[in-house]
Amino acid sequence: MTHLTHPAHPVQRTRGCAADRHAPPEVDRLEVVRLAALHGYDLLDTPADPALDAVVRLAAAIAGVTTATINLIDAHRQCQLSAVGFAGGPSERSESLCARNLGHPEVVHVPDARRDPRYRDSAWVDGRFADVVFYASLPLVTAEGHHLGSLCVFDAVRRELTPDQLARLRDLADVVMALLDGHRRHREQQRLVAEVEEQRELAELTLTELEAREEFTRALLTSVDVGVLACDAAGRLTVVNPTARRLHGRDADLGLPASEFALVHGLHAADGRTPLAPEEAPLRRALVEGHVRDVEVVIAPAGRTPVRVLCTGRALHDHAGRVIGAVVAVQDITTDRARIHALEAAGEQLRRQGRDLACAVTELRRSNDELGDLAAVASHDLAAPLTSVLGYLELVLDVHGDALGGEGREWLATAMRAAQRMQGLIEAVLDHARADSTGLDVRPVIVSDVLTHVVEDLGATAVQAEIVLTGTSRTAHADPVLLRQLLQNLVGNSVRYRSPERPCRVEVRVRDLAGGGWELAVADNGRGIPPGQREQVFAMFAVAVTGENTGENIGAAAGARRPGHGIGLATCRRIVARHGGRISAEETPGGGATLRAVFPSVQAPRWGESGVAVALT
Image 1: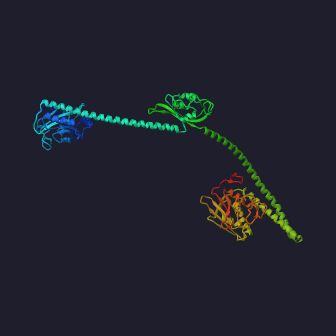
Image 2: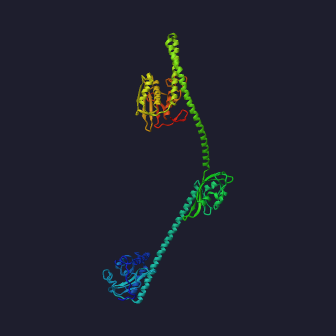
Image 3: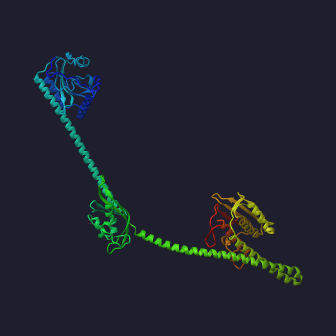
């Protein structure tokens, strides 16, 4: 065996081989770089190339053999890029003959591989894969010195190549590298063309998107009811939307310096009289100061109604933080300010009226107190002499009744009945006055106990009446004195205005309400209250005219009226109102009247008949 080259270098193996497990780090680094260069050609597992096939056939012809191939050595395999004389295909790198010379800088010429210790144990030589005897390998090296593989010729018989043959094969190895470099450049050009096309499409998409955004921005600026002004870093106007033009009363010239904007468009301070200096224009301030917020300005160009606006804006920055301009939003607040001024004027008027009303309330309270005191005093002072009158009339009737004769006794009885009615009226007025003048002491009250005292007070008038207590509750939260007075009036009315057609029945119902509070209802089967008079019966001195009577209205002199003075239900309303409740009248199913009083769970302010709130004591 002879070599036509320099002595063989030690065979360099990859990290995938068992012999390389202890290779130094530098060898690993060089292999990584070599593999990167190999993969950069993107040739592994690619279809056959006619030009490379022609080079391989020419190599076989020059060497005088029938088999030749181009082998590329990957990390773990050998890939045959082109082959002649046999069916090429990938194989394990550890089984490759060319992998054993990978990195050798010169041609490897082996006339008889069976006698060469580097190759004689290979499966390609010892018959396991093939019977290779003659073998020659020419390295394929990039311009950067990276070994990709080799151009290889071989035969099953012993051969030796001439120097001229070896020279031609070296030329063919250079041709192979030129073709590989050409393929790489072509693919790079294709990649660049694809990238350029992609960039062009991206640019077109970007341009389309920018146009769409510009159209959207233009439509947005046109449609919003807010003025928008913008300038560049030099302070020249770049954007003025239609609303801003309308507010300023003229077309703003694009390119106009923001410093001149105040002078050109008649900008004034919030007082509407002081002209703004050029540097005080909101757009100029936003550019210089960085931001402005809620700056009130009056736009008052010559010959035009002033417009009051509110300006908010800020400086604009690029990604590096440099100021590239400013923008200001201008909102018309002329109508809002006019409304505010009108509301302030109305509020001041309401405050004056409130003060006047407070004075009137104070005077009304004083007058009510005086009237209550007067009613109490008058009732008390009238009650004493009236009692004397009644007493003497009774004495005259008892002592001199026979002497008076029938006509005299009738006159005397009429006088006594009139005095008794007057006495009842005085007592009712006194009760009405007391209902709103005494202190309010709300506490739990057992209703059955109060009702028992009421029945006792009614005396003979309640003897033939059925008075019952029903409902889901037996306890009420109220002032016990006022509750007794309330029940005495309501139950007394039911007994007094009983129906002559059926036995009198009065039902007193007490129940707790789901939403809080409680309800007192007094239902009877008496004469009832006509629908049109159920609200009027709570007025002072009002007496309902029933269907049995011929009176035209409450308080009418003509027609028979219900007995009473028309004060009891008015007193009931005052008592319920003092507790923060309300009272109403309705019809009892089957005939009669039901008086229903609703009391809150938490005591509320009482409202007097004049509509003025009165604090509870």
